[in-house]
Length: 484
Image 1: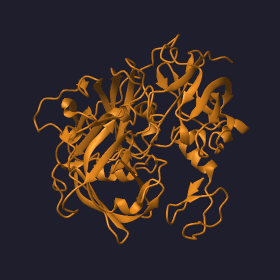
Image 2 (image 1 turned 45 degrees about the vertical axis):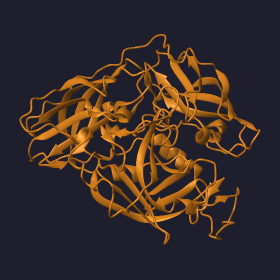
Image 3 (image 1 turned 135 degrees about the vertical axis):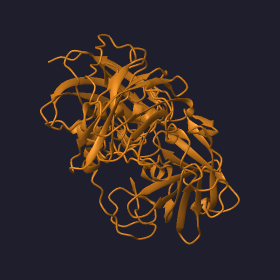
Image 4 (image 1 turned 90 degrees about the horizontal axis):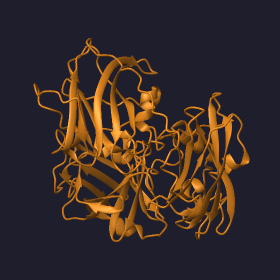
């Protein structure tokens, strides 16, 4: 069941016209959407970085979540994010008015700070009766203007290119941004008179608080209040696919938290040159280290990452800083600078330590009830992906005990790990019925065998296959030996 692209109303299966507004229904390509997810390394939509083994709602950068450009300004980040639509229908007229951020929700708990700043008033939304909407932020002077339409859970704000689902719950608006909900409460004033002036934090807060000129480098240390250790290990100039100049910045990342998380999810990264923020390159996964930037890492596992930005090889010094995404500079900062023409180059490859007997999934049941679904990990088989690389197909039994039609990829999240790091989803050389079934809706009370394919990192270490819910730690999993 989908939604009307004009008014946001739910659509019956195979509808040709919207039963609410009469607009013609444009057919959606499930295969196309799935292929985009797989090429991005995502086993699920970009809001999937939640549940057991992760900080529910982790940042985007989609470990096995979405591989996409790192967006620097908070307003742009919000509009690039996908939202998790709640099932409860609401009166969209209740969403009209002016709203300001009042909390963020992480791990199911509300917090009153974001990037080391009090969250109150940092972000604003104005939803007008004339169908227009605007959003502003203390992190940028730019105010986004668009339109809004109804949805089953609130409204959708859009501008033709971007769509941002805004859900309504307990009298507050919520926007899902790569792993956390930003919660908005009704506020006095309007977009022209926010509680916190637009752009007032544009030059500070979070990773954007680069060290002052002349400040001694601290190229390694703890960030995120001790949850992660990072060490900047090198930098080299390169060309991207379009032939543009880029700078690849390398650093190691050790996850000391109790959850499986990625550097992309948990860190704020900033690079500046000639007083301007350097924009991240669209294809962070160009290098093996770039893939590691976006992959989930088990507790106490270390990987080497690469963050790629556009830069001027003939320009001035490049400053680079890393902080924890949720603690800002208060939780520790690592920083250094690079001079174009005198770059240290790429570091030596950091090989993952083999994990002969992984322990993380061992405590999980192989089957069980997760939210409104009964799910089990039923098997694994060696296959080849479309590039001829070794891969594994994980099979699952998905039973839908909810009251609505839904597919497994909408309802739950799947991950497979090897040597303590998540594997990328890929297209198999030969698809089978269960691969296609992963994105197909299942009727209430029915069940289906579905599968996903992951590229193997090696042919010796065991793999851990897990299924987890979207908003809690409930999960099932199985450990398999790699054969063949």
